[in-house]
Each structure stands twice: as C-alpha cells, then as structure tokens.
Image 1 (cartoon, helix red, strand yellow):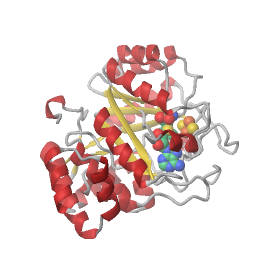
Image 2 (cartoon, helix red, strand yellow):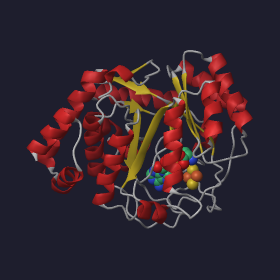
Image 3 (cartoon, helix red, strand yellow):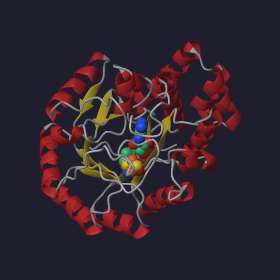
Image 4 (tube, protein in one colour):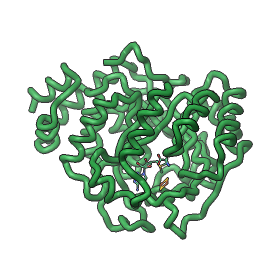
Amino acid sequence: MKKTIDKLYETHNLDKDEFLYILKNFDTRSGEYLFEKSRQTALKHFGNSIYTRGLIEFTNYCKNNCYYCGISSSNLHAERYRLSADEILACCKTGYRLGYRTFVLQGGEDFFYSDDDIIDIIEKIKAGYSDCAVTLSIGERSHESYKRYFKAGADRYLLRHETSDEEHYKKLHPKSLSLSNRKQCLYNLKEIGFQVGTGFMIGSPYQTIENIAEDLIFIKEFSPEMVGMGPFIPHRDTIFADEPAGSLELTLLLIGIVRLLLPSSLIPSTTALGTINSNGREKGILAGANVVMPNLSPVSVRKKYSLYDNKICTGEEAAECSNCLQNRMKSIGYKLVVDRGDYKASDRH
Ligand code: SAM
Ligand code: FES
C-alpha cells in the first residue's frame, strides 16, 4: 500500500488497478500515511489558509428530477422560493462585511431566470464588489449562455459530473438527462475560460468501487480547477429515501487521493461532510481540503433548500456560521482568510 501511495504522491497519477487497490485495501494505518502526504501537499500550496465561498442558494425551483435530490421537480412537498436580484445583492453585502470575496450563486435548473436576468445579477455583483469572484452553479445550459455569463464577469462554474459511468448515470437520473451532455457542458465551460469545478457524491445508490476508480480517472484527465466531493445523504421525499448515506471514511480517502492527483486544486470540505459527522469539515481539511462554503442565503429560505435530510447550518445567521467556522478551523490550526482564492495556474501539475 505504501508503495502505491508513494507513487501517487510522486507522479500525481495512478492507473485503474492501482486506484482499485487503494480503495479496496485502505485501513487506518494506510490512512495515516496517505493523509499525512495529502495534508502536507495542501499546506505546501495554501499554508494554513482556508478559502471561503459565500453560498447563495437563490432558487430551489428545478426542471429536473435527479432521483437523489430533495429539490427535484417531482418533490411536491418542497416549498419553492426564488430570490430577487436585490435579495441576492443583500446577501453579498452581508458576505462582503464578513470577509467573503467569492460568491457562489447556486440553484436548481430554473429557467424562470433568463440569461439576461443571470447576466444582470452577475453585472450588479461585479459592479458593487469588483474585488470579488462570482461562481455559478446553475446546471446545464447552452455554450452560448455560458459564454454570455463569462463575458458578463462570472469567473468560475461548478458542475459535478456526478458519475463517469453511463449505466450508473442512468440509475441516478431520468432519461431527459445524459452523461454526455453533462460532460459536454464541462468541456464548453473550460474552453470558454471559466475556472471549472466538477466532482461527485460518495456512496450514491448503485455506486461501485469501479465507478469511483473511473471517476478518479475522469477527474485527472479533465483536470478541473476545483473538485467537489461530499457524501450522498438520503432525502425523505425521494425514491432513495431508504438508501444508506455515503461514509465519512471513504469521503476523506477520496479528498486525500484527489489532493495528491491534482495538488493545487481547490477542494471544499463540504456541508454534507459536516452533516454526516459533527467534525466532518475539520476532518476534510485535515485530509487535504482547503475551501469551505458557508451559507449566505437568508435564514428564511435555508430550510427550503433541502437537498438531503438534516442539513446543518440552516438555522443560523450568516455571521454565526462565519464565526463558528473560524473557530472550528482555529481548533485544528487553520484560519479562514479574506481572499478571492483563485486557482493558481502556475502551480498546475
Ligand atoms: N442544479 C445545479 C447542478 O445540478 O449542478 C446545482 C445544484 S445541485 C443541488 C448541487 C449538487 O448537490 C449536485 O451536483 C449533487 O452532487 C448535490 N446533491 C444533490 N442531492 C444530494 C444528496 N441527496 N446528497 C448529497 N449531495 C446531493
Ligand atoms: Fe435540479 Fe437537484 S434535481 S437541483
């Protein structure tokens, strides 16, 4: 095991069999060995600074019906909401005061917001907060739309590939969605010039170790600037309500592996990780993550953006979340910094 981990550390790559070997044989001792290396790699690139992204969940309407997702169109119990441009700007104002220099606009695939609406929001944020980055996470749109968002000033785009296996993709999504379109969107975003984030859920229903090895190969090949990985957590109003959640250990292992695969990538320690374990986000940082994404959405809508059950931080004001996270990071020797936290291309391996 040590030999394979050393190879990953030195060459930033492995073949499928080697990934499978690590995934199948990983234990506490090899964990200590791998996490020491992934943590040191993150420290080398970012020191003990943790970048923050203020997450604004601006709509929970969605035209899609991803089987795992609590805000999918088929969930008739979801209480739907949309934020106006002014409400979004108010979130940015609070976030800026708290030291956030990246705002992530995330939502379901909600075509109520036309391209012109999205552009108007991007331009207003950029006009008010010229030293901030804008990240979009609004799903699959046309090449033309992505190009217009980029031209309007959006800097980054998060679009998890969810799984790189066609058959697995079909088990998680209805026929209207395809892995090939998802990947095409990712390639379009990259070609346009966005800093792009992809990723997948750990422990999603029907996921096999083989699928995960393929996900790692795709991630290495695509070489995104950001990689989002969190455990799948069931939502009571979905067909996967009774499926088990993904495990903390496997999620941490994958953060560690991806840190060694793409040493300078931006990897969040996700809210989902903090939901399955009360110290999940701290553990994620110690496994090699370097980003946190505190919630900036108005408290009145937070519970409504319910992707999965028991999501944390849905009752707190933004300032409370910010303080809480700063204290959590301090407790493990890290600090939240006031910084856009851009990807540094010069560091790319
Ligand atoms: N609509 C956009 C998209 O599809 O990219 C962004 C919003 S979507 C809710 C953001 C991410 O939430 C998805 O990429 C998925 O990986 C994650 N997610 C959805 N349901 C989840 C669940 N039950 N457990 C954990 N993560 C989930
Ligand atoms: Fe669209 Fe989840 S199904 S955001």
